[in-house]
Image 1 (cartoon, one colour):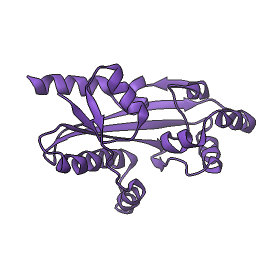
Image 2: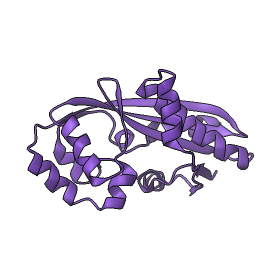
Image 3: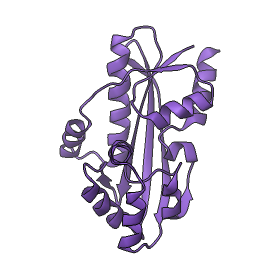
Image 4: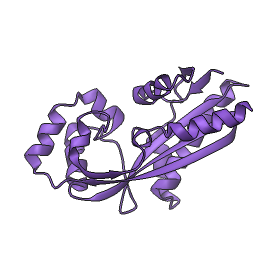
Length: 194
């Protein structure tokens, strides 16, 4: 069964490929910033924003691809229940990492599977991360190693690469932190096939 990944994330595709889940990418192209602003105005917390975005992406692609299983996903950072968005520039990335510096925060990853424009399953996973107390020059040095397009596409740290060195401790599933709680997805797909 070939599933559609409603995400342009190269990391998410790589995880599916690693676990030999036959997939193709059809990006949802939803305006994430507009949806986040709307949800924040309604008082949604980061967990609700992550869940809603995964569902919106999944359903949008599912409506255009009937009878196909579509996987939507979204990850957000929550610092003291405040939503931390992906940076739009290198300066913003530096500000975000300075804000997260020496702090405990949560990375929330949500996934949603839809068929025929309706959600049939969703799951949200929250991981706790505590950043080391770093000097500004250490943060700048870390950021200098990341290409700008990667930084703006995937956020301020990649735990699958050098980002791991930023943390004092991480409590949570590695794949969930990378954006796809793959074990839960596999469990659901296996049950669905039965």
